[in-house]
Amino acid sequence: MTDQVFVFGKPVDDNAFTDREKESARLAANFVGGINSFIISPRRWGKTSLVKKVIRETDSEKILCVFADVFMAKTPEEFCEILGNAVLKQSTTAINEFIDNAKRFLGRINLGVNLSPDPLNPIKVQFGLNDEQQTIEDILNLPEKIAEKKDMHIVVCIDEFQQITEFAGSLSFQKQLRTVWQHQKRVSYCLFGSKKHMMEGLFDDPSKPFYKFGDIIYLKRISLSYWEEYISGKFKGAGKSISSRQIERICQVVDYHSSYVQQLCWYVYLFSDDVVTEENIDAGIEELIDQNTALFESRTENLTPVQMRFLKAVANGIHNGFSSAEVISKYKLGSSAASVATKKALLEKGLIYSEEEKYLLSDPVMGLWLNR
Image (cartoon, rainbow, N blue to C red; front, top):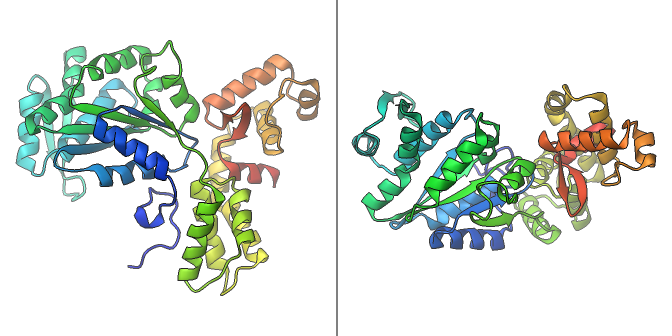
């Protein structure tokens, strides 16, 4: 199977990775130095790809990186079950060691070990959490115990970490996590997620348990110079040519959004012959909108009419001043108070985010869809 020309919809490997040298170096230094890291950016800007790249570069005999995705967790117990399984699986090389570590370090927990024919997920532990607080702490301390046994440092990378804000008793669980994790000497954490507003609320708020728990890394847009080298190289490698001006147009139309740059480039690549034309780019943009229409309809079907009009205002280039009489009148936002409430609701839903005192759509292609 040949390498995919452009990659989107999943974390990219080194062949499809461009820029992020500074962020990669900083995150790798944190991993090696045992510093907790928080990565914050809008959706699909490459957080997971960045973390997995650094994991590949820093995994060694003395540093073990564990990756856990807690998107499906709805309770603290489910969070701990996902985390515990990830730590056990990724710190062992054989089923016997997996089971031995589970029994040795989690002996007070009623464990159920299930074998599966799935080669990618052959074994799973189900945790019977009886004395809830004590057994949760046992699981949270599992990385530290395994790190001590193996005489190494463990970096636990948790994707979609903002899910903990939706748990019942979330603040209490956050305090418990902070209390346990801050005393661990052989384990550090890399926490990141797809909802920028929620992640900022976890780490930037002085009243929250995770305030100043580690180094916050904000991902910025990848600059045009990197995209130009990457995109032109991909087209040239396939025997096609694309101009610098056309690459700039592709990047601008999706606001330099990493995943969408790759997806739009793929459609343009499919529609073009030896030389890319403006018509190829136009067709690629239409295809990009069409492919995401069902997603946008799903994400907006439960919005109020005022919330939809607010989104259209942002799509039309209104990035602040939503409480002004002019904007309220033009987009029928009701009142200044209603406009503020609408903005807050859309932030919490992750449909918009703030950047340098401006409010932007989290998904730039949704803006194209709204305007179409």
